[in-house]
Image 1 (cartoon, rainbow, N blue to C red):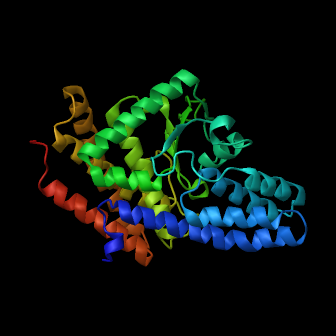
Image 2 (tube, rainbow, N blue to C red):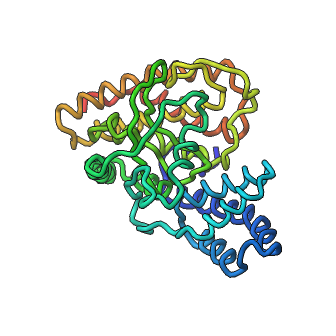
Length: 340
């Protein structure tokens, strides 16, 4: 297996994935900007400055979101919408507010994520769900509470799982806390990540109300982002995306790529729980929560791995990544560390 595809978290690898994703964005964006400049719809200096900023270092997720919306408008032959998205992209301050200082704790608020971004963020967060429960911003006091817990959890991970913490800091620019409740037959939104908002993870603040649940959510969404980075958003499998299979993390049947994502994610969540359990840094209540979560992770991983083994038609990258996750979980379940 290539060293770059190994299961263990790696902060330097995460930083390199971020660089590659930004490089691909700039490569794709340049001819689009050149076209608008040639038509007089954009200034050459502003366009070049945006491309240089993208190449220079991490950028806000809104840059990727606006690029996705711009491309959608171009393919829809909606010139007016394309110009609106272009101007929003050129007017956005692309660099993170706190470069190199880890993820910002934000919510669906224009003052935090950028003018006109609330609807775009909400749509992209629910992009894979046909009938999603709505998500809303959390209030200022809720954001302060969730943000403080998020920072405390990152500090805990830096002590207990430093490689995972470094990976998260190099992959994630914004943790977007939202509010969501069950809506009829639709369950509450738990969390999400999408390649179209590279660098963002969404978490339901109410469902991540202690350090263990917050760490679980960070590991969960961070693992999705890692996989998106490895494939540049492409599938890990060659299965027909219309096919549906039982998922270890969802009640509704999912495409095989989603099942593989979920199974890998469970292994990363279990890595996180094992690091916390072994650390002796948890309270008795937190330790009990982590042990319960660990049992759930292992049982659900077995379910997912069984479906994947029967039905997945992997790409080379997908096979290598799943091999690493399976090897980690097989070794763990042969010699559990619960006695710590």
